[in-house]
Length: 519
Image 1 (cartoon, rainbow, N blue to C red):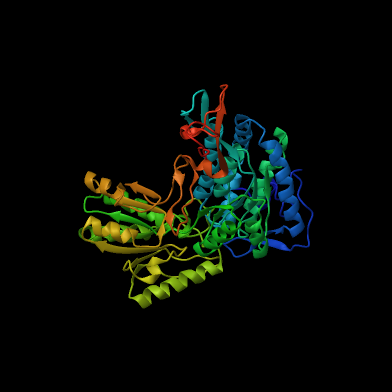
Image 2 (image 1 turned 90 degrees about the vertical axis):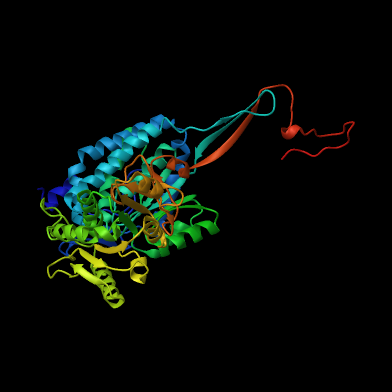
């Protein structure tokens, strides 16, 4: 295993850097905007410090990105895809090191850190293919010797605000698609994961400069709320992609909407797995444990609730308790560890607060429920017998707390699953064809993601990722999510010698009198 010093050196973190990178691929030299401190959640100790981005830096970044975008949008889309392909190759070379940095800075186990980098690589591959498939429809015109079609053009400079739990992958979902569609990107990462962002920016700078397109991506590292607010209000950024909490996401939508800007929101989840009377319990148990324990319950797709048919309750809970008893907790860089720490002390406080609320509501803690007495922010994964309507169950708690409840009929289970404000990911474990089809029907799951016999966590790149209701309605990554980063233009070409109007309308004096004009 590499030492921290060797890891930093390999990723270009050996010296202090400022928070922003402009179109020249050089780091700004501002020091008066304070520092953003990176903390190792496994120890509580400081990993490093990054100089913050100043207001002047921010203006320079956006100006440079605007300038770069005017030339980048003229580069043929397949050529833009080639640049992203090179970034994907660079990520392959640095997968081990970057995966280790993710584990070090945000507490994911090494396998999940590596998996996040692989997600970036997969996203780059997807974007390369997409660069040759930015299709628009061709329509038949009702007017003779006319041709109609639609085409898609880039928006401009895209603002991307990401959360700590996926410190680099969610940026890639947005940035790689935005880039191949002809946009430049300004990234404000979570102040809890500045080193991951700086490392990725270093990697991109090298590739972009080598390809002859420096400055397509820029970084604005800050922990100042007012600078993030400025970004959301900035009319030079036609789209703000935000990943985070519902209250902040609602504010982003309101502020961007007031200036008639666009927002792409990926907010909270309160994801349920339904286990029916025919389910394969071994399969269900594995999915539940990974969904609830993975990333210490700090994924938006983490499994929060298990809704089990009452005849299966005892057998499923027995399996879950046995599996939870084997979860190893500790340093996420150690190969045998299954769960790392929460991100910080505030997360631990929310874990405690949730357990207090659970006990006050009458919940039964079946296992776990303790903060571990050791350096860092470690807690026990917890299973609770609960009721779906309790206020605490209706909320998203970013911690490894799993609520288990029972149902009698499938309709009741689906109603319970849907009876929360969030609508991100959902799953049903069944071997009953009619049950699976009912769950996937219009009267079934109301979530953006609905799975059969796989868990709520671990979405693939090919499908559009996102959810409904308080999850925000955004879609990122796969399918036609690329359209969010582009503007649609309908085009009509008259290749004839006459000027017929639509709807058969004539304009001017005729025997029948005056007629109105077409819209």
